[in-house]
Image 1 (tube, rainbow, N blue to C red):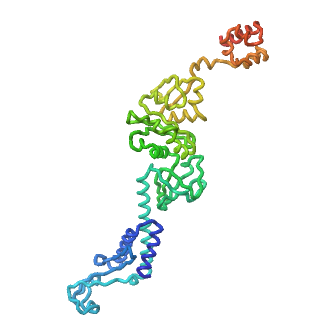
Image 2 (cartoon, helix red, strand yellow):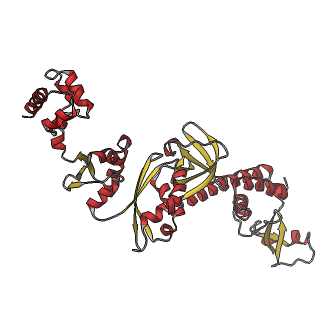
Length: 412
C-alpha cells in the first residue's frame, strides 16, 4: 500500500463521516507520530508532510552526521560513512535528511494506523455532534424522515447526522413517511452505548414557542414576550404573551390580520387550537383570561390552598370546562391554581327537581301537559302564576292548584 492508496482510503472514510480533509490530515499525522514513537522512542526528529489538496503523505527523518566511532543514537545520528554513501560531499556536523517509505512500517502497522484513524475520526464526529446539538437545545431543526418505526422515527439532518423522534414526542395525529420533510425542536442529547442520540420533539412547549418566533417578528425582536405555554399536543394550547410596547397589542400581533400569522402554526401542529391571552400580574384577571373563551362572572381565590372558585352563567360552564375537561385543565396549568367551576346561584338551582320525579303524586298526562309548554322542573312551574298556567295549558284550575301544592310541599 503506497501513500496515495493510504490517503485515498482515509479520504473515502472522511467523505462518509463529514470530517473535513484538513482535520483528517491532522489526525493522520498524529497517528503516524504515534507509530514513530513506538518504533524509534521519539518522533521529534521526524517531519511529516501532508498535502491535503493532492493527498500526498511523506515522512522524513532528520539526523546529525557524526564520526563513525562517536555514534550513540541511531535514531538521531548517522555515521559519516553512511551519509557519504548518499552524497560524498557530506561533512561531520551537517544535517542528514532522508525519506522514510511507508512500506518500511509494514502492512500490519499501516492497517493499524487506518483503524486508529477511523476510531479517532469517529470520536471526533461524536464530539462534534454532541457539541452541535447541545448548543441547539430548544431550537428548531429541519430534517428528512429516513426510517419510520413503531415507537420512533429516524430523521437525517443536512449533514447526515441521525436524529431520533420517539412516538411520545410526536403529535398524536402526526403521520410521516420516508422522504418527508420534518420540523421539530432538539429536546435533549442522550448518550447510548457510547454514541450520541439526539432526541427531537414536536410536543414540547418550546416547539410552539419557536414557531411563534418564526411567524411573529415582534417576538423575535423582543417587543413581545411569551410568558408561559401549556399544551395538549394536537388538541389545544394556551399561550400567555406580554408586550413591552404599549402601542402593540400582543394578542393581535400573534394572531395576525384575519389569523394570518397563527394559521401557519395551527397547520404545523395538526390543527391544534391555540388560545393566545394577554398576560397580567392581576391573578384574578389572569385566571379569567386563562378560561377563555368562557366569560367569568365571579372569582374567589384561596391563596392558602392555591385553589380558585369561579362562578359563571349556566351557558358559560361548558365553555370553561371544555371538551373532555381540556380547557380548565390547561387553564390550571397555565395559572398554577386548582380551578373549581360553579354555576351562578348553584346552591339554589341544585335543589330543583324534575317533574318526572312526581309521577307517584301527579298523573303522567298532567306532567306531559306541563312539559308541552316547556316546564320540566318543579321550580319552572312554581315561577308562573296559577292564572298563567291555566291560560297556557288545558288543565283545570283545581288541577293546577293541586299540582302547585304538591310541588311546594317538596321544597318545604
